[in-house]
Length: 487
Ligand code: HEC
Image 1 (tube, rainbow, N blue to C red):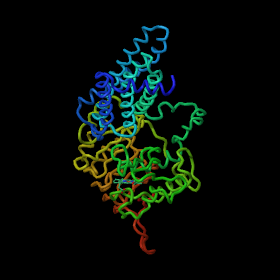
Image 2 (cartoon, protein in one colour; image 1 turned 180 degrees about the horizontal axis):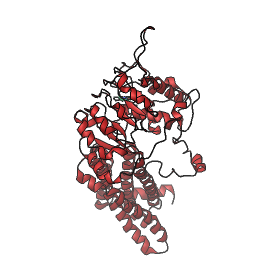
Image 3 (cartoon, helix red, strand yellow; image 1 turned 60 degrees about the horizontal axis):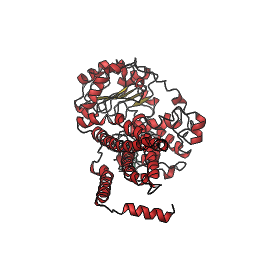
């Protein structure tokens, strides 16, 4: 058929002749518009909502398999239908079912995302995909009768092809949501990865993964992570760091002077744009030097060393020791997560990396007795975030049982240091923050016996190394803090 003829036939079919066609198309158009504006009507606000929504929503990952299977069946039936007309007839019916199941999955998907408080680009993309797919399936359903009557030959097959593309894309976004973005490529042969350009993912042993990411993690992610996205910026993965924030990119590879992130961590600490914000301790000179060198030398996710950066101290970081199996305690951890108050979170997607104890929501009421209640989780906790809580020296008796503890935050607490002598058996401890407490040089002295403990923060305490003394004054006792630069 010539293009002119096609248009004529299209117009013939499009321009409503009968009232029924007119009503059908108006309804389809109205419905499509409604679906398109749905994400603006039901805005994802990042907060969990009613339990029943989450209950139903969690059937979404199961339910989506139905439209996927049905939609894949349609072209198959149409093709085999050339030989067996009955199968072609079935294709129309299957397409109808596919549309109904798309709608059902869409509703469940909304309940899951809205009810569960999900937000993020992948969720939005997956949602847009689901909506496109539903509309495309509906259009297929409307265009198919023309094709059956041999009126317009191309429209339906073209729409069906688009529908299948939308299906693949949407399913991929969904897979990324449930399994993580590197699920498919993690075990891809290296050659293939290089060929497809996927090799750029941060390698586990890279300078970024070992040195830059941990700086962001402990200093920035509280405000630039999943929970809070201040300034539109997330710093919890390489891709997000490179993506930038509301004012555009924050890292320009090779150009530290144009990298806003570096500018903001090197401003004078009182400056209103200084990062970390809200009076959090500034990054150490060493950390800033690393970030600068990393940007200067290409901000690569894979490079393993930076010229001019001496890492002998870091290479000696003790290997992580897996914590035991705490799966029996998971229900209790899950309950805590839902309730107000202190929480235990998995440090990473690997359970053997252990748990982090968070108290921020309840810091003021979290004291020695509350800490004691975490005794049964003691061997699995690798990071205790007790900053600004009401714990006192009495808590060292509980803490000494946290045998896998690697980081201990006690900044801004009532700790005076009596009892720090109980910590040396914690052989994994590499970080302790006592800034803003009343610890003294004498009370922190026992820490010098801990050979893995190389980050001791004593900012704003009586134990902070005093300014250089006049030559004839007797010198202060040995300072364990001298091992690492206090911020
Ligand atoms: C206590 C919360 C907090 C912490 C911690 C924090 N930030 Fe921020 N950050 C903010 C807020 C709020 C904004 C948005 C307002 C502004 O631009 O000053 C912001 C904005 C930014 C921006 C600008 C983003 C844009 O596109 O405008 C950069 C870059 C940044 N932060 C880097 C960092 C780095 C690096 C760290 C860690 C060393 C960090 N921040 C730690 C609260 C924080």
